[in-house]
Length: 253
Image (cartoon, rainbow, N blue to C red; front, side):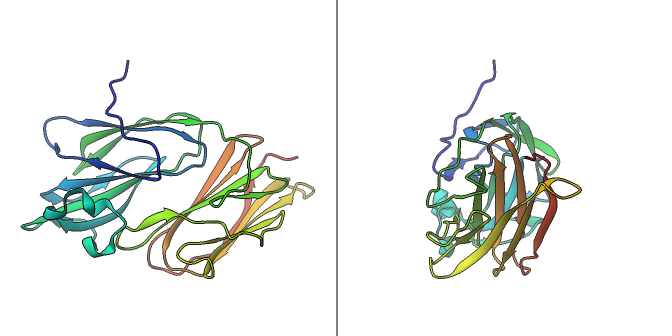
């Protein structure tokens, strides 16, 4: 029997206060999520010297930043005025707290239990259960490609920790291709294509993408028929590189 500290799984942003960094670990439950559906937890009230924060996939430490202790958990809200981006190592000053996100990027079904380490010491036991992907139906946050077989989503984050799902641009997708925006529906950010190359000498479904942004984002693509998933991460800052994954899904036909 596993003892769990439960954190609500939805919506995408959930606040979790972490106050005990000494004398053992805390357990944080991301709940149940669908294959390819990114979940985020925000941790705050951390003070001291931080040389490293590490965890193994499918969890990823993102959006490390500083905020005032007087703001409490408000530093986790999508309010860029409360936080400033930072890198490690870092020692918090008077009235400061370290804030960071952990993204669950689920690309395999089943229980996903990992240990997050701070300064190489185990501090958080992260737990989640990833369920099979449901059939794809177009939603404001989802593009369905290749006869609705492939479910495509995006998730973005700014330097100040503002983050959200990337809405799909409505009314302009095709069976192969879909578009996403982050901030404004007239400002398209990401084009993603799933191409049927099953007749090639190496039968595959290919994933291609191009973007016009320097914002951090993660793309997930799920083959709902074969319950396989791929993720593609673009870090904060540099221009977005093209994705030309001709080995993405060996799930033909």
